[in-house]
Length: 221
Image (tube, rainbow, N blue to C red; front, side, top):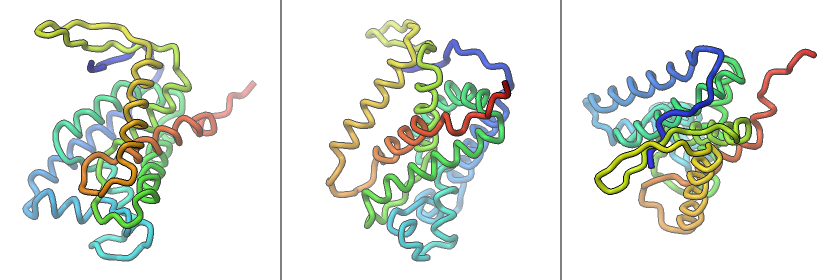
């Protein structure tokens, strides 16, 4: 099941959403062509839980800055593609409701909170976190609260056949959220060997869900 668009029209052009997508793609290309290799780039600009909590400087840039740089980096094409697809589907509506500038700050805010949500549960980890997943999770949390009745066009694979189905956003995002929570619980307490930072996704989703109404512009009566 792969969502590819919603039926929720917007009244403004999603300039920031498109800009973030383009920026993520460009940075991924720079990662790939980097002479030092993707691993070195990841350890240089990724957010390492131990260092972003202690602020112990063990990277070329201050650990606090890696919280921001890490959310524009990705570990592979599927990682990048999945995040950007969800941002494209759901981000434009949140940008439409918040306005371009508020949306930028909301997106970054969710990304920062998600990074620290993971870090505080893995305070001794020296494995860098990268990806827009936390920030995008915040977008999903905001969307499910603001547009619970919207529908999402989804590709469904039935063996060799592919069809499209219109599914309520509440179900699409709700199913996604359940997967994050289940995997987050299962991964708690396990040795850190890399992989998906499920708790970062949960943190981003919850902060987006719980705070989006505080970010909405005031309506003048």
